[in-house]
Each structure stands twice: as C-alpha cells, then as structure tokens.
Image (cartoon, helix red, strand yellow):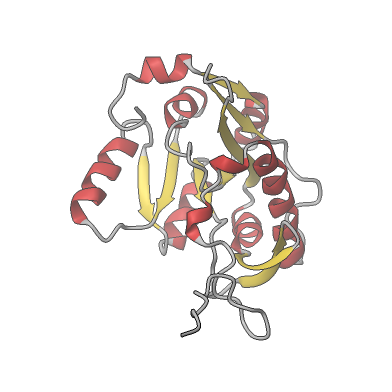
Length: 219
C-alpha cells in the first residue's frame, strides 16, 4: 500500500499525534531530524508526513538486489522529496541547513565511527551515536517519529514526540541513551511491530557473548 496504493486511502487510515511539534521545530528554520526506527510500518506514514511538511528527505541503505532498489526508491519518492545514501553525511547536514525534515532511522546495530554500547531493554547494544552530533553541527531539532498499527486493524497512529530538553549535550552516549529510552517506550506498545530480524544485539565486543550464535548439537 505504501509504495503502490492510493495516498488518500493511506492518509484516511492514519491519525497523527504531535503534529504541532513538527511545525514548531520547522519554524526555527534549522531543519528537523525525525529520529525513527525499523518498525514493520515504517514505509506506511510518508504519505501522511507529506501533508504536514513541505520538504521531506530521507537517508537509505542500498539493497543488494538492484530491482528492489528501483522499486523501493520509486515507492518512497511518491511522498519523499529527496533520498540520499546513508554515507552522505554532508548531504544530510546540508538538507538540515536548508530547513528540510530528514527521516533518520539510527536504531540498528552499528560498529563504525560514532558507535557505543548503549542499553536497549537493559541489554548493551552497539548503537549509532551520531544523531546528537548531527543536531549540534546543524542546529536542527530532533523529534522522535514512531508509527504503529492499531490492534483492532482500524488504522494507524503516527506519533511525533516533543523535543528532548537540553539536547544535544556534549555527551553523545548519554544523548543516544535518551533516544533509545523513547524507542523502548514505543516498542512496548507494539513489540511485534519492531524489526527484531535485524539482530539488534549483534557485533558486540568481548567479553559480551554472541546472542545469535548457533548452538552446536552434540554428536
């Protein structure tokens, strides 16, 4: 539905909470980072977001299958104004300085520069800490952006959170932990709608155990 369905039909199914948070942030003229996550509904809300933001841009990771890249890009560009690769940090900062709304899902396991072990549901997980750094570089406001499907299949809710106080700070790990806490709160509402298939706790250094290691069966 997100990539091929009627945008009007999609919008009719969505309730938006916190729309004013986005308007207030854009009024500052320094861009908005929508801190999102890999929820099963993540593709569904762009048609609704398009109605409340004049310029939407998003970071993406290329798929191994070229045809899938084409389908994904065409589907997302129905409602998103610009897509840029996950390594194009300069493009993201420039977008924020142009007062764009940038969708940014930084919740997966991450072991590169600006990563740290951050608790996720009480379990240390390698996490991207760059969100607050990007906010400090650009002056952008960071808002959480989470969606969920209602349990009775009556529709969907898109929740745009209010800005965190004293964010960003000089402590990237502390800032990231605060964002993870907000994500935890949302996931508790609909744990079956989070993308656990991405192996959130992989890539941890010693002495942390590999939680996904296949146990060898005894002969």
